[in-house]
Length: 147
Figure 1: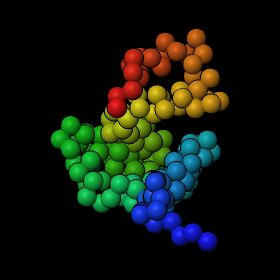
Figure 2 (figure 1 turned 90 degrees about the vertical axis):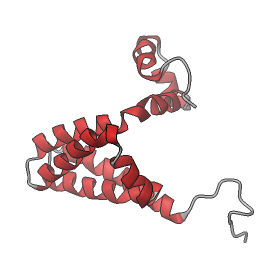
Figure 3 (figure 1 turned 135 degrees about the horizontal axis):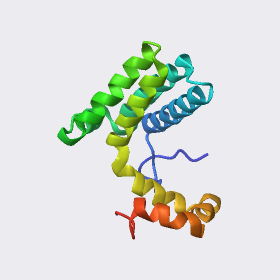
Figure 4 (figure 1 turned 180 degrees about the vertical axis):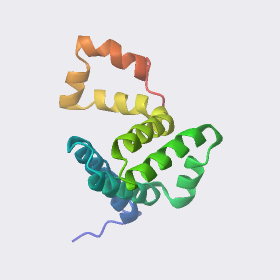
């Protein structure tokens, strides 16, 4: 049995990062379920906690603090955290609306990269490359990958 380490593996992911990605994904799933269950405050609160716990595990505490404290993202950070606070206070609809505004302000720069990645996937890519949707997604992604 081979034990994979950084020295003998091309792509090595730390267990902390794996747990962080899992927590973030489950947090997003719980938030979606909370919205589908007509803004169930309990599911939304659990989703927010898992999402907030997953981000520092994925990218590190220092990078998380640096990301959320950037001068151009402070409005998004305040709206995102304020929306989470409102969800915890059982004002789920208003909280999610404010939180969504904050998410768009915080993570809006990543959407072109996400759309470009999704267009390269086998099944989803063929749907997103449909002629009717291509013009819509081209506005978000631009002509080429940002990398």
